[in-house]
Image 1 (cartoon, rainbow, N blue to C red):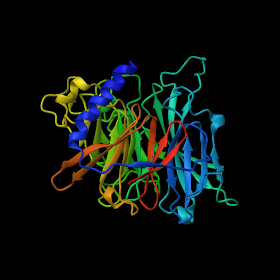
Image 2: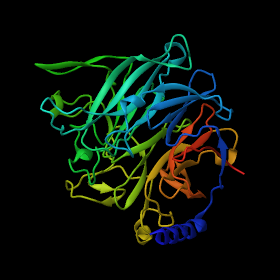
Image 3: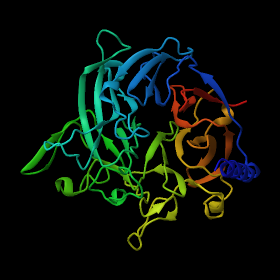
Image 4: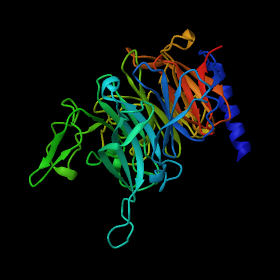
Length: 419
């Protein structure tokens, strides 16, 4: 198996080197005193304080000063006692944090975590043993480096049938709305058909207005939810049919596991790495109302039968799991991988040669790739391998200055630099 992977990597690299028109990158170790494994998200507080908040899958968030070695780390948030990884050790957990655009004054932030559901009143396991929880918290009034856990306000809870494919990201967009990525619920092959079903929140990117409260449903099943639905969401005019109808929170659908996504701060484009099933990984630009094909398609390829004539948003780029499939790919010279990790378009100031390059990677093989994209022509103009290294990539991060970081499963955190 190891021999196969090595040969596959070398084969993929041989193909991409010939097409390489992008600069190489160098990983610069930062926050070297942080030792815990599985950092899955990192954000800089939007208040000018220069504080980075590092999210660990086990259920805690550490706050450190940007530019430090991490030795100054303080525990900002901890729900490890809730055991958010239970039910899906590899993909459940505390998965991200997002700061309210008005954080400087209102001190509000939002977290995404998972929770095991208790057995029912007859002590039988439930059909949906796990739930995803999206909650609002406030910073402690007495300590700006400490969260007030008693301030929790649950916005949304989503039942989950299995322990994998949780998506797991919260991000405020340029429009001030909260974007939420959810996978298809897990197991394999999307057994419940969530990808193409707009009556479920799974396999979607949602868009919520956290500054509003809204009443939904129709009599007698009317309820108030902990957020508002933006008036220009794509399905906002659909009939009110409760759980049987289209969910108006949906911004885009047909996504298997949108593990990490980001907004290009120069253009506003929403880039997403959607983790594939058995054969293909893909990167998409998410558009309002877009259908990205899962589970009818995996990448740009047939997966299950779908309606005749249906149209789907095409990936920006894709790559296969096996060298034998490279000839069938959108870009045959793209090297292989097994699990895409969505990244960021570089808009920092320190490394001008990286400007405009979308940087993404592969969890299993540790490959860093880049591409340049012409938004007007809607096509990739250059792509290639930026770095091959052995560590598992958990996530990427972007600070307030537009500099990009890589978070490794081992606990290492690197700034992405150019020679």
